[in-house]
Image (cartoon, rainbow, N blue to C red; front, top):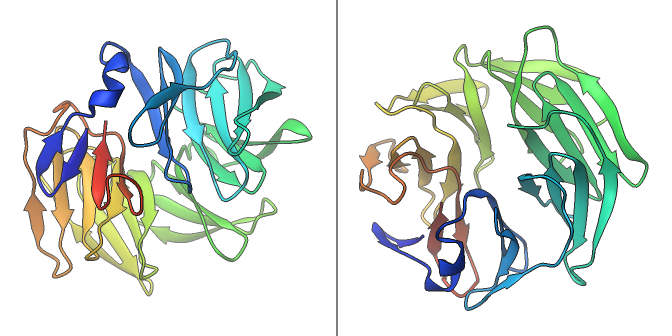
Length: 275
């Protein structure tokens, strides 16, 4: 679906996947939208949805793309990447690791992927173990930072800073299970909570925005600086004045909104995509 304001419209060009299960959706810097489903991998450019030809054994678990040249596909058996320009695909690594429910982050030409407490890196050298979290700390989200490191959140509510070489330091403790990390245009850090609500972190201070819905799993900033949050059965907005606005509770797929992002320059200018 695409949303303007609170109006939701179905994308007719994607009718071919109406009966499919969508596992992930991702927008690259050229404004193309990549959709992984049981129908395979589609590239949507605003008018037409074109299938991307590649052989991918197993179910596509995740799509990821950072600032590099590739979009990554993680399946139950292999990790592949497609060149964003040529759309040629290559197998980077075969694996027998249980990556279901994996957390991913792309940096340059490398992909970081976790399965609970272990963190792996996949690049031209193959797939290898990058590091592990402290005992009983399960990775829930990762967020790249501009200083060469990245942030890791856990389901225990802690946030760690990795310096990019595997050395980690705890920097925050939200004391509530975290589902998703997000950084806005002002550099503030937002933590979507597994049990509902959002915590905003600015200058080391934590401010909680409680919402009576569970699983704040995806966040996006609109052109006015408001923060949109997709959760189980609901979309809500944290306005710049701190007030919370509940959007249409009958949003498409009232079970949960698992992905939301703004198309800043593409065909659907200032629209928001949901699935």
